[in-house]
Length: 218
Image (tube, rainbow, N blue to C red):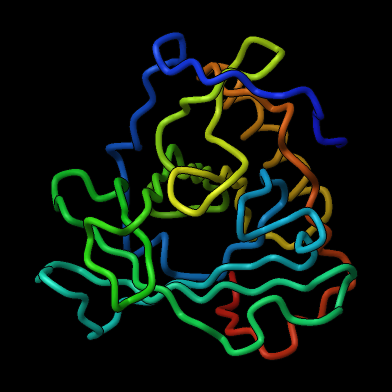
């Protein structure tokens, strides 16, 4: 998929009202590694970094300032410029995700562990399935869609750190199952009024994930 080069138009009022899923199983979400199939670029993830992108999460005893709730360690992995190229996160810098509201657990905040929640960015799980006790796909957005794109639909922005990003996760690295789940997630986004025009493919075939923290899916 080619990135739409037409400039987006900031149009918050005309964008759909999107909320994180309320049927969210944190334990199942953290059970195995996620492999990103498609995503938007962000200020910290340019198109050159969209190779072998994976994310693994763990409950942790880490703490963040001024917060006493659940903290989740977020291990991000990716290669630059090519499959098995230079590691984007070579020093394995780990983020701390937080669930400020136990009654709204998919409305997650994510940031370096030394930052308080007020400086953390939204990490919203818009949907995950097929069942709450067996996740094989998940849609993650960097908050509510607030930018209208030329096709008339909205998404988050493509720049900056907080409030940007859209990711389609699969437990499967690549292949027929991953392709089918990606199509399913794209249809869900269309029904939400979220544009697909900014989603780019992430190459997972041939990746060896050297140095990554991987929890196998079975």
